[in-house]
Image 1 (cartoon, rainbow over the protein chains, first blue to last red):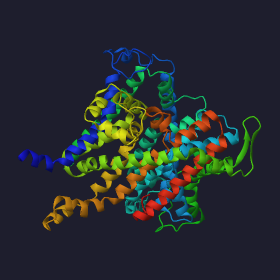
Image 2: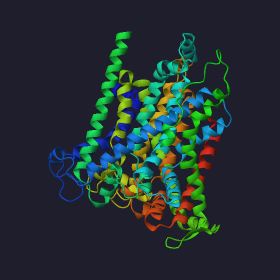
Image 3: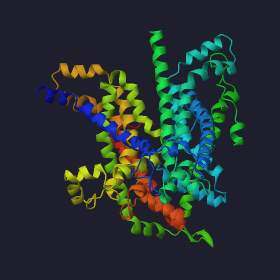
Amino acid sequence: MPFVRRLKRNLVVVAGLLTLGYLLLPNVIVTVFSFNDPKGRFNYAWQRFSTDAWTDPCGVADLCGSLSVSLQIAAWATLGATVLGTMTAFALVRYRFRARGAVNALIFLPMAMPEVVMAASLLTLFLNMGAELGFWTVLIAHIMFCLSFVVTAVKARVMSMDPRLEQAAQDLYAGPVQTFLRVTLPIAAPGIAAGALLAFALSFDDFIITNFNAGSTVTFPMFVWGSAQRGTPVQINVIGTAMFVVAVLCVLAGLVVADRRQRRTS
Amino acid sequence: MTAVAGAPPEAPAPAPRKRPPGRRGRLVPYWLLLPGILWLLVFFVMPMVYQASTSVQTGSLEEGFEVTWHFRTYWDAVADYWPQFLRSVLYAGSATVLCLLLGYPLAYLIAFRAGRWRNVLLVLVIAPFFTSFLIRTLAWKTILADSGPVVGALGALHVLDVTSWLGMTAGDRVLATPLAVVCGLTYNFLPFMILPLYTSLERIDGRLHEAAGDLYATPSETFRKVTFPLSMPGVVSGTLLTFIPASGDYVNADLLGSTDTRMIGNVVQTQFLRILDYPTAAALSFLLMAAILVMVTFYIRRSGTEDLV
């Protein structure tokens, strides 16, 4: 039975591809249903093909406004978390100092905490301080939980860096600032970029912490959450699909470029 | 935000070989740490303190709350909401086990069998993240719809009879049952299992597999005695990265479940945002945090991988 034997040998491939299907199925549904023309307020059952939503993606009140709020918060949170996280990562890798263990634990804890706990405790802080909930409280919260992820990403890159490169630069009469800008920063850049990308994705898609601390500010995930109670417009699927396609195309283009470069050098 | 802008630039200390660090040089790490650590102290540690204090307060929204060391709140919270606590552990635990069972073959496939498709498969694992997870969770409402093909097939294969008997589904419905919530949790946190598993599998030297084969190990023995033990760091961090967020999640239970599938996250959310009973909500959140911390510490000690960070 050659077929059975082949199946047995490739069982892990079959199982792996099934898992991949499980992971991607919802995205297929989201895409297909972006072309739906639903009967009621909810877009859960297929009716008939239509491109109405694609030609009018902002046709639902507040949808594109919430998208712009989310993009703004994500951009500022990425900037804040990347600057603070990179500094912290450099300090942790390059220097010996007291309370290192405590600092490491402080960085690790936010990643090991259920979001709802951070969300609830931040809300008690803001309530006690009498802070007005809105854009700023969300931004503060996002920088807080993105910070640890940036530190981890940058730390990994800086740790694998050869310190002799910087010493060589200084032997060649580069000052500390020049050494940093011309040698250290370019080498650490991939780690910083990875951290920044992660921070952007985390902030843009965050719901739980935002839900607690946003007051009346509506981010895109908050809009989706609200629409799950009131009625889901097809435009949500359009935006979800568009983001997916753009991001995957960018990543695939990056892969092709990297692949070509590698081939040329080898 | 001004603290960020006013922070010193990240100039590395002068190389020790040339100029021994002066007093300013010794302070550099503290200046670098200051803004980030301050941010975490003010917006992560301090909230925990405020939450602990809120949990022992009494009062009402109109008259304000006061610290009265009212520890009974904790007792009442546990007495009222232990089913939701139990459910959170059960659902998150089942989702973690399912993630491990589903994720391991895919991580293995990407690490050892994918060849030139490796990067493409990795992109496909991460790609769903680019669509908001709420939209993708809502898609499960369509997939698991009562008259849909998935539920029809499960019914025809008598799978639903078994799950109903186990109390995971009710009749011929999947939506609004524990099965739907666990399915959603598994789906949402699967990438957090696959990626650490892949990282630790990819580090394994392929020659170890050959060596095991040369020493007459069958493929399953090779897996049990070589591959799996070497992937333990990935298994540990993957299970933590799945279990922790899943145990506090309330999105899946809300969108895919019913009032009978409420988890502890749902309770904290409604107490905080709708009922506005801050002390009870803070006590519940505090208990969840304590439970997670104890579990994580115990788990990391047991599995002997303390350098996960």
